[in-house]
Amino acid sequence: MLSQEKNERLTQVGPGTPMGNLLRRYWWPVATHDMAGRVPVRRRLLGEDLVLFRDASGRLGLLAEQCPHRRASLALGCTERGGLRCGYHGWLFDADGQCLEQPGEPADSTFAARIRATSYPVAELGGLIFAYLGPAPAPLLPRYDLFVWPDVWRDIAHAELPCNFVQIMENSVDPYHVEWLHGRYGSFLKELAGEPPVQVVTRKHVKVAFEVFEHGILKRRILEGQTEQDEDWKTGHPLVFPHMLRVGGGGIATFQIRVPIDDTHTWHVWYQTYRFDSPAAPQASVPVYRVPLHDAQGEWLRDYVDGQDICAWVTQGAIADRSQEHLGRSDLGVIMLRKLYFEQMDRVAAGLDPLCTFRDPALNECIELPMERDKFGGAQAFRQMWLRESSIRYSPIRDELLARFGAVA
Image (cartoon, rainbow, N blue to C red; front, side):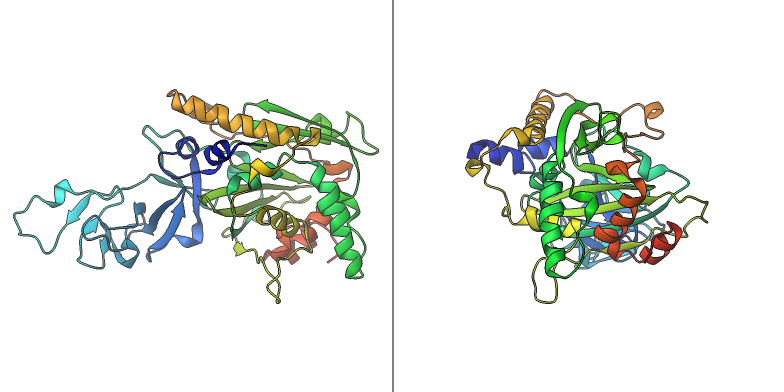
């Protein structure tokens, strides 16, 4: 368990908080590629209200929402070639936040030169738009493999969840929940619906291990019938610090990206790549879709793997009360992750770069991450299960994926 003070230190992400200071040392997805157009859109990240826009010249900008003039929302603005013009009084700001024009002021006024809106760097990669809210100089935007592989299809799913991002990340180092939440409980729901259980996730964990490595925490497991020569143990897959889980198999690889909107809300992004057995024509664009959270009766959807995870996360409360929990040996991964967060907060407080910040371009061409291909000892079985029992079930290209992977629809 954690004291209330430590729990607050772990979960508060706003400006000036220890965790907020740590998280501001990283680039975060702030939008999908289809969200950024001529119409400004409100976004909220790490407790800050922002406006994302693309000006008439195509340049992206990300500004604090409130105009420095009279605090009206810049989301009520017009995008022009020079930037974003506030709809209230016409003040014009470029993507760097500099005020360029103040129509109501005298023609010889130098007032505009002294006014800046808070602005943050933004960059596009792999169909996502990333933002950096920390101090200069910004580290490099990490070019993780899934974002830059040239020979794959992609899609991007997303949903806003009413809970703190840490309890979602803790699930990533909790392998035992797979056989119970997705295996036993998931099979129970299938039984009630008159459907067969999902066999791939029902096998018992015999051994698990976690290790801190250069990209975060590497997770290994041995299931019943496996040995240390199986990829689930020999290779494993990573939690990429501080905010992503890498998972997949059978030609499918996914980043589950947990983006802290504020202390009690998380933007969850499923970033999927697909490598087929035979070449496929490149995509014209990356499909984007929302993952529904509730059924027709308003209940949390629980009839698939990601829905079960979401229920477990949000039912812990907006911020899990860790002063009331009781951890056992099966929670070693959770304990390791919390320790890593606290250690990296201390590094930032000491003026050092935290884990997974990159500044050497030569090391950032394509950051290859470990991940088992023969997931759970059966790549084909895992692939077919994942196309039906994960968020991919809602993908607009799901039927085509089923056909290309040779799965039975």
